[in-house]
Image 1: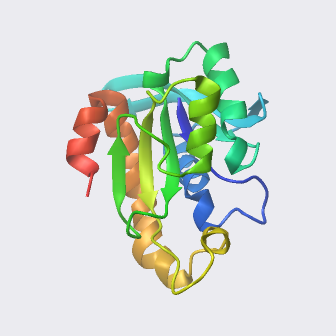
Image 2: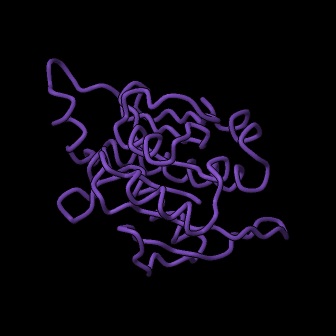
Length: 189
């Protein structure tokens, strides 16, 4: 299960906070897995990812519960499809990582990311994998809540986040076929 975190609706579509949704959308396009189902308060896509003659079935998930309640969609889906926490990768924004950095993690605390905390609470486990996508800290004394709900500037989009989404998608393929350790070794920067 590949989960992208974000907030539903066009108002939030291009926000920094929605980088998880944006990565899942790109992954869906690249692997021709349409996000065409609704189930347990989430938009889903199910299909096969192919890489060098290998195939892996995946479930793409965009919770529609709003970020801070993401676990209310993820946990029921994991139970319904019998997906263990170790078979889940959650893609989310991270204020504490420099803009453009990617950090994959095996498990651990939420690091203050409320969507991740909701998933931990609802799954009853921290043992799912994470792709932390760095969006950087807000400038000056700007409120972090306002910052994460801003859209990327055209320059940020072209120079940092457009290419970063491609890297995240490549890291997800590595995770699927090689495992979390290989993905961490190759893509953590």
